[in-house]
Image 1 (tube, rainbow, N blue to C red):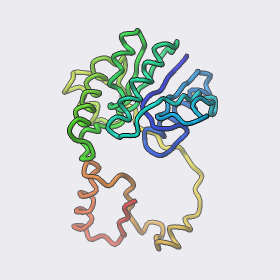
Image 2: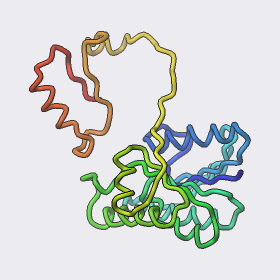
Image 3: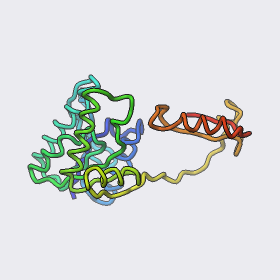
Image 4: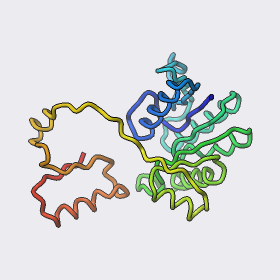
Length: 226
């Protein structure tokens, strides 16, 4: 099967959740014998098409300006996929999914993974928020399959768009434990002596709720936000 992926920033990269999912999914599919092409954002001199772990990588031109970056990139990447014989075009995140309808017009099988309802974030407002909501609507209406990461998102698409989706939780790869020397020596943290929050510190992630609960409970364990 020939599969294209659109929506991440760079490959290989672990700079964000979307990038991690694209990396893990594409390399595993390639290892199973599928032909996978991922579209990176932004062209670089002499480094715009290469092979990485049996995954084909193509860099697509886009503007550096944040409001135009994902929009221009996703449309140009979609146009490129239209003229190749991909069996599936897999869009990651709702913003880059706006041109998904064009792929459908040309008979492509499409999948959209919703990595979050980004318009909820205070980071996006005005046109950006509108564009994210548009991508959500396009995915709900035109994608052959919609994948969500949480039960909340599954219920959201069902109630708002009457659209059934596939719930696939993000997995965590098993790793070999290593001694925690750095956090012990630098921060004085011992095993079972702290509560750890790892994530973006913004309202939609709820760290303020964690702080309030921690203050009310008056626990002996330290609270660590990373």
